[in-house]
Image 1 (cartoon, rainbow, N blue to C red):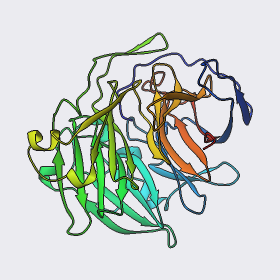
Image 2 (tube, one colour; image 1 turned 120 degrees about the horizontal axis):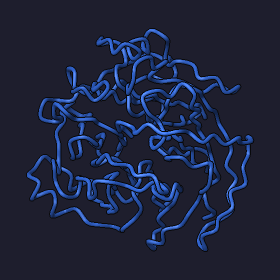
Image 3 (cartoon, rainbow, N blue to C red; image 1 turned 30 degrees about the vertical axis):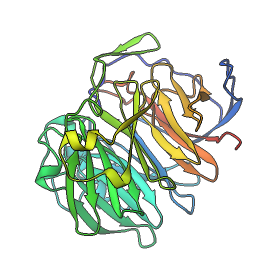
Image 4 (cartoon, one colour; image 1 turned 60 degrees about the horizontal axis):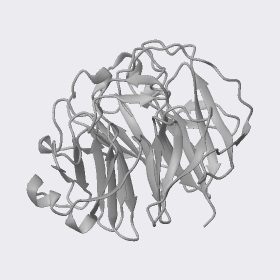
Length: 353
């Protein structure tokens, strides 16, 4: 997730590779949380796992000297620029090139492709050119396409945040966390448009969050997104808010806010989340204020999956082999200098079905 972070003192906690998390809440299960990889001095937000188990992360362009935009975590825990060094060399100095990542906020592996969402908004200074998706072939490790948003799909201050690929409609859905709204990219004809632009369902509901006693005073709009392809339902949520909304994908069309909003329904009241994903009936989402990973069951019970020191702003979720992967982006603690901070990727077993 993107935010101009409030600089705070990091309280470091020494962690082993495997943790047993005690769940004090009566609906929580004991979970084992395993460290996938950690990196010092580079703040990571997104994580995704490909069908063959390769783990990818991204680092946003929020400060000078960022080492990479996208990296693969190797089996020995190294973070290696992906798909190559050249494609990642623009982020450190915010150099604008068509063939180079500039300000990546999310990575999503889908089937044999990696979708790299480039906000083209380095350091929140405004969109340069247009936001875009780089599509990387995971077999050849080469960029095979660049999907550029049209002018009516974004604003000059947009920060396109996360995405989901929908094979049923052959579309990609995205959130805009700076200028509230959802973005739709149609893969059939390479057109794009916005829905629910600056609408109450995509706007922040509060101006401040309380992250376990620490005030977080940035308002963040539509951010979390999850897709249920079995029931053709798209879920979305503002980060600075407590309302989980949904819309049937058949009702997503280029139309007025009033027309589209008639099809939107509020699903539940939850904590303020960043990371969010749907899997086999459950919507998994963070509660940033409690520093937990939770899940909403089909019966709308909100349960805790992970809590404790292993959760520090759970930013992005991915699921592979019945395990949920998440990043700790530590936004509540990170300031202009993160050289002494360490950021982790963890995984934990999903609840029994």
